[in-house]
Amino acid sequence: MPPAIRALIEEAGQIAAEIKALLPDLVNARRDYVRSASEEHRQNLDEVQSLAHELGERHKVVLGKLLEASGLPEELFEELDREQLPGDAENRVPRESLVSSKVEPSAWIEDYLSNSLDDLLRLVDPAWLKQDPNDEHRLVEIHGGIPLSIVRGTRRKSEFPTVHRFLQAIRVAQDFLTGHMAYDHFGGALLLPQIAQLGAKLSRLRDVKGDLDSRFAALWRGPSDTSDSVAFELLVAAGCVEKGRRLEFIPPTSTKTPDLRCHDPFPLVIECKRQRALSDYELTEEAHFVELFRRLDSSVRKRGVWGVFDLALSVDIDEANVDEVVASLVNQRLAPRPDRPLRYPWGSVAYHELPRRFSLPAPTRSYSPNMLSHVFGWNADVPEWDGLVCKVDLAGQAKVDEIMQAVGLRWGSHSDRAIRKRSWSPMNLFGDAMSQIPGGEFGIVYVAYQEGTTAKIADLRVESFKERARAWYHSASIRVPISFLIRLYPRAFGEGLPDLIESTIRYYADYADPMLFRDFPSCVFSRPEAS
Image 1 (cartoon, rainbow, N blue to C red):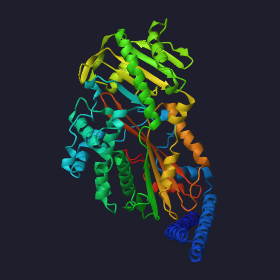
Image 2: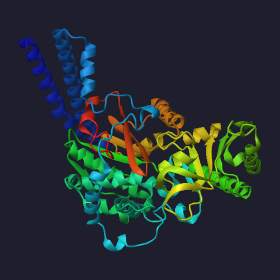
Image 3: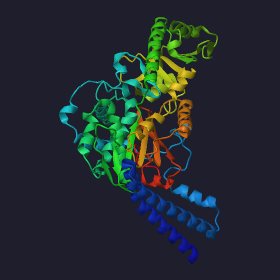
Image 4: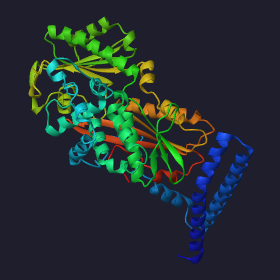
């Protein structure tokens, strides 16, 4: 290497070290001024910011000289920088890119779930584990003769259990490990990776200062509907420790506070927010379609009609004439080509006949992904419909090799209001997270939500977020250099094997160095993180 280039590299490294060493002073000066607004603190902030600006300009000049001396195109340097950032170098924003055939597995759940579960159980009150000894965490549809309903790729009963959420997670994990035939593979698709990661990262969490015991106990002593959020915070903390960060838990107070304080590469706080699986609108919508199916199922069974009905609504379900819709679905079997959609002012219907009784290619668990695919054409990877409600005469059998009296309703809701409501943006989560960051602080935001809807709605959600982000602002008293939007795609395959894809979109402010992404985890639910 020519001496001139070596000298420039050394000078650039020295200036970068000076900037890094100055960052704590800059953060503290900004925090002091925002909190006191005194003239003394304002002058100190001006001095530190001026020095930081001067160092930044010197660094740009040296890098410019280095680029010129190297004789290499600027694009090559930019590409080298991008290669240093975490990620798999592919555009994973579109939903169609996040499917099993395009994402390689990073680990197998069977390899570490058992040990993780054992480690977690040692920390939980045994008496608490024995409460509510019922089967509500399992697929009760097998024995209860009630329809199975899937919306946005999830089973409502799995996401809103009657038992405590953490107790559900433990019991579902035990069912998976023991091979219980009524194992809830819908809930397990996310709960199992979460349990496995929590147990596997306990040693990392012990490196976080603060009251870890209270934080961990909040998983099961706190409200059921906050357990997943606590798990998310713990996984983010463990991921930061793996990246070499020094952390401490911030004790909760009566006022809004962030979750974690990080001491390097400069002082900042971290706030984590997690969206529940289904919104109020989606829950209400699903309830309407379940009721519609009950009426459809009752009507066609009396007539000895079996098969899969397709319903695509162009109006909101609560605005549709249910009697008319059900009658149209029932009468579709009499059409010359029942499988061809017949249009109405409120939408379209189609019907695919099934025999009253027919054999499966191989024995399978009742309502397994294999069965739903073969009988009802349900794609667990990327659903083509907004929801599925179905019912099969299982005679209480947890494993079947033939199907009897199968009736299913694949539904789609395509009104403008329905699309708008289901393609909600996670911007509100970011707003809530940033409101937790105290004035004068630098902060990092982690937001997670569960995705399982159609590709169209999933992509609309990301586009909606991007559009709102361009016009969005936060308080001038805080700085959020980088943030992470974590999209979770849990689903089961085959006999119910859990499969979770975690995809993160990273955002950085115009005043931030994107290289900061290297210091913090992009993925926290999957193992290991993509490099």
